[in-house]
Image (cartoon, rainbow, N blue to C red; front, side, top):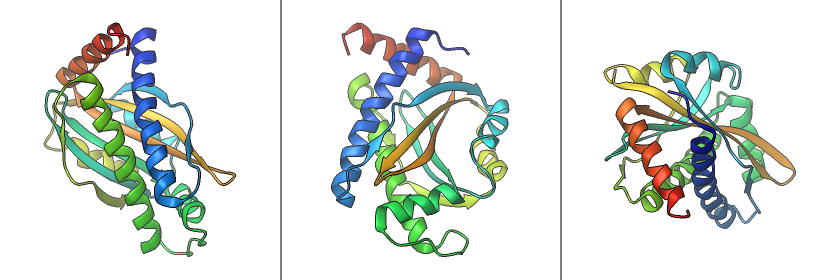
Length: 204
C-alpha cells in the first residue's frame, strides 16, 4: 500500500502532535527542555522492513514494545541501537554509560522514554481520531533486529505493513535518532488512513 502525499502529510501532522505531547512530558520528567524533530513517516510491507531498518540501526537493538487493540490494532515499538540508547542515558541523566551490554540504568531510561513516546502517540490516535484504542504495558527487549521483527510477525501473519516514524530527539546539544515502528494489518492500516482523512476533513 502506498500513501498519497495528502495521507502522508496528515499522518505526519497527527504523529507530530503525539510527539509534541511526549516532548512536553519528557521535559517535565527530566527537567531539561526536550525537543522532537518533525517526524519522517513512511509505510513499508513487512518483508521489506528488516532491510529498511538495517540501514538505520546497527548491532543489538533495544526496543520498547506495546501491543494495542481496537478498530486499529497492532504492535508498536520504539527502536534504538546500543549507541543511541547509551547517548540517551547520558543526555537524560548526566551519567556516562558503562561499557557494558546496555547497563541497567540505560535500560531503565530507554523503557521510560519508550513508554512516554508510545503512550503519547497511541493515545493521540485514539483521542483525535475518535477510535477506542487499548494498549498493554510496554516491555523492553534487547536483541538482534531480525529476532525483534520475527517476534512481531510469528503467529500474527495478518500483520502486513509497518508505519515507520523516524525522528531526532534533541536535548542538551545532543540528538538521539529514534525509530517508532507501528506494525498493522491491512484492515487496521485502512481504518487508520480513513480515520486520518476524516480528521483532516474536520479541520484537524
